[in-house]
Length: 402
Ligand SMILES: NC(=O)c1ccc[n+]([C@@H]2O[C@H](COP(=O)([O-])OP(=O)(O)OC[C@H]3O[C@@H](n4cnc5c(N)ncnc54)[C@H](O)[C@@H]3O)[C@@H](O)[C@H]2O)c1
Image 1: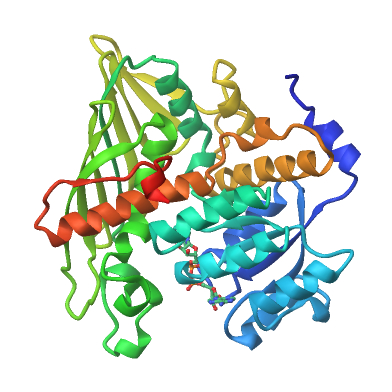
Image 2: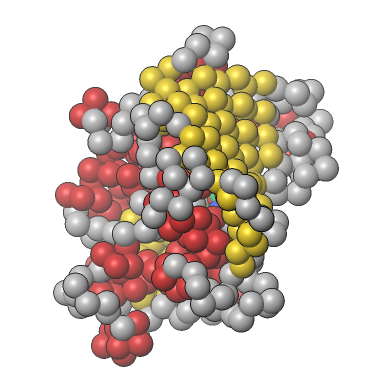
């Protein structure tokens, strides 16, 4: 199948895709990143939204984006109903509200025939993730789960290297997102001020797995592609007055025979973001740190460590395509995020034009990634309840995971 030229695709489509937001208001952490990322390559234009549970924040966000007042809604149900009836209705929705909203919101928009971009974790249970996976297929909708670190060129390079066998058979996979930001290291004195991330009744006691460990897990899954067969978990709570776990150690076994560890933490004092991975095969190891994202280190057995940097010509096609600037001009988080929007935008445009869209869609995190992560999370919660006993992780494709 010949590659579709992106300039031709854009020209034939003739306009930007119409997108609406759920959450992502001015009061949110992640909304500004999505606004910036979706605009980098110009595939999307914001038309509608219910940006916040607080109407004044929602309206202020909409005003700052010059939206028409009749495209600002009170609920995502209202937005789905009304936008689906408009000729110029949104074609894509971003769900950037907290995780317990994701399932209902995604269901409504998929059912209305609207493609979905959804923040992680995809939902709050494996059952919900599986239902969304089924629904997206039944409705022939496209779905991008914004595990944004998959957009980094050097993460894509790691994937190409591991999958082409440059490390030989993979033995060990470790990743961590160990944050130590003061906002997550202390609990407010007044429980009413507690953020949803730290409320057991909203997210469950193991919320850290979806909020933090899911990114570390997804990185390994994205690069390696093999599923985890079993997990042993130990989760703990260190911060006084906290009602959910704030540290999670997961030891993992893969079907392939590889072994691994995932560390998710809110209490790694002194760390900023704290995301990294180390992958070791028979022939060498790879290391990458999100806070130095332009560089991937390859350490072959018995050889010099090789510094592989973004922007050079000898990189894999997928890494090259995700790179915009010359070497030495750092790109970073927002542009990695933008790569998901670019690929998803191309996929949606190609599909609407009746063209093959797989070349854009195939490496994007989607509902299937969501099912894989939720399967791990549920097994880890079970293991933790049983003092770290090994717990089987259901395969995403197995009938019993549905
Ligand atoms: N990919 C990443 O790097 C990354 C980083 C941060 C957060 N996240 C994810 O993004 C999501 C949001 O996180 P956040 O940190 O921005 O949360 P936040 O609490 O800062 O913001 C959530 C926003 O959603 C709004 N909201 C809540 N319920 C809503 C509803 N029913 N309809 C419309 N709006 C609603 C809130 O009012 C708020 O504006 C979570 O799933 C989180 O895990 C991802």
